[in-house]
Image (cartoon, rainbow, N blue to C red):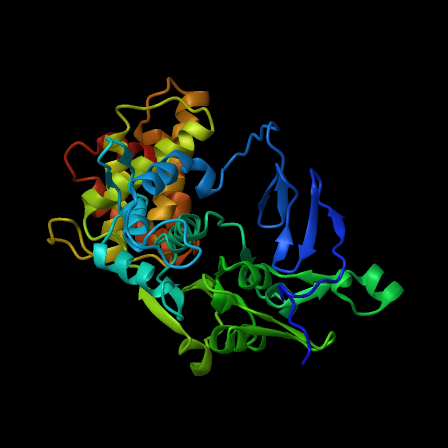
Length: 409
């Protein structure tokens, strides 16, 4: 019988491979790092060397919460999980631990959705997070992987150009030409590494990947095996391995999943925020986090403009005003919560660098126009009608109306 890649009985020599700040080895159980170093999805970090990441990974940004949860978590944990399913759900939904540690909510929505997602990862079925753009699919995927495996970086980014090698494995062609097919010439994909180490892999925008490449996952998800025919070997997934994929069916360039592949996933649909207040809270929280990472000043009075942006987006998205009295035409864009976060963050930067630090209507007007008017002809007409029939007549919105007219002129 051919040996398996990752077979602990395989005593063939290991190799050292430079990885920028340390050395990795491909050992019997997968990638191994020397004592005193930490591997993060193929990158090696050395203690004592500070990083200044613009956007830290979830397991770094919320390390104190994950550590507190692990200390307080006395419930059964699946093999190789850092936390129990209950603690993973608490990490995403928020709560207060017995020692007083506050766990901030990472996802605002129905609790049952998170519970089903977490439970799926504890089974042998992969998880597919489905929803329109901007419903926090990537955000939830990252935090689930961080809480379950402590590493959210085993990631395949799906695009129209994603090749099979990104999901299976590739080759170091210099060594391949010099030595022929060998384990030393093999370049494992994030999925292969997750299988060998019992980790959680992520595939973003699965439906953007060509259909024939998507189907590479069928054997991985059904047989929990990844053959390497060039070596006469295979990678067998160890306990703890699972995969989270995200997808939407609203963007152009979508490749429908085959029925065979879709059966391998348990699909969880992430909805848009149920209420305006939920959405305002989400936007305010994320804008505050992003603003602190960019050293932008806090805007304690900015909640009014955030609420206004959210109101505009929800009304145009739903095709009706908040009071239900006026029917509206909807633009071609999705006007998601993620776009509202982007608009407010841009406005905050304008207020900080070119204003007095107070977020006002003029700071968000240009961002709203850019988010709403995607089709220069049709969407501009929708926006102008909304301005004249709704915004112009709304009490307390005169400054917003003037700002929007100014940027649209």
